[in-house]
Length: 112
Length: 116
Image (cartoon, rainbow over the protein chains, first blue to last red):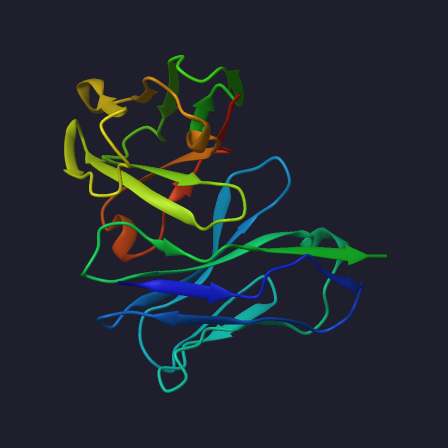
């Protein structure tokens, strides 16, 4: 079956540091890949997505590139802010299943 | 426009009791999903409604869980009788067309269930 593996936290960084959150996946088909973010007290929100190999999703300064050869979709941001503190979930969808398959989530803490 | 709302935000019950969680999707969203996150685990898909019909309920753990969507509007998820392993956060999400295929799901804040 499908699965998503991502680094677990918490990940603590200083403001303006470079961020990478690793995500790798296993899927039977050709999945679409997503990063969701959950800010404190809110529901999950779609942050960015990529639907085919070599696509790059980007939003709010975050980027992730769909790498089929390494089955990865790592999330990066060049300079994080305190407001980026949240839980980040990597997820995939493909035709073999109806719902999204999520990773365990990475709790990111940005210190001033 | 109101987002996806869930009630209650937190419920504490004893083993063997019944709990009903409610989800109000975004108006006009035909697709409604239930997910669950058990402590330290992934968020797991439970089921998917299209309007009032169950499209896929392959993720429902067992027959102690019953989901309904009256008239294709709000949905309820009943757990009866609750067991300790049912503790976790239950998320509801809704979408227009596409749903999981596009990933553009709108999630509620979740209902935290604690079974003692």
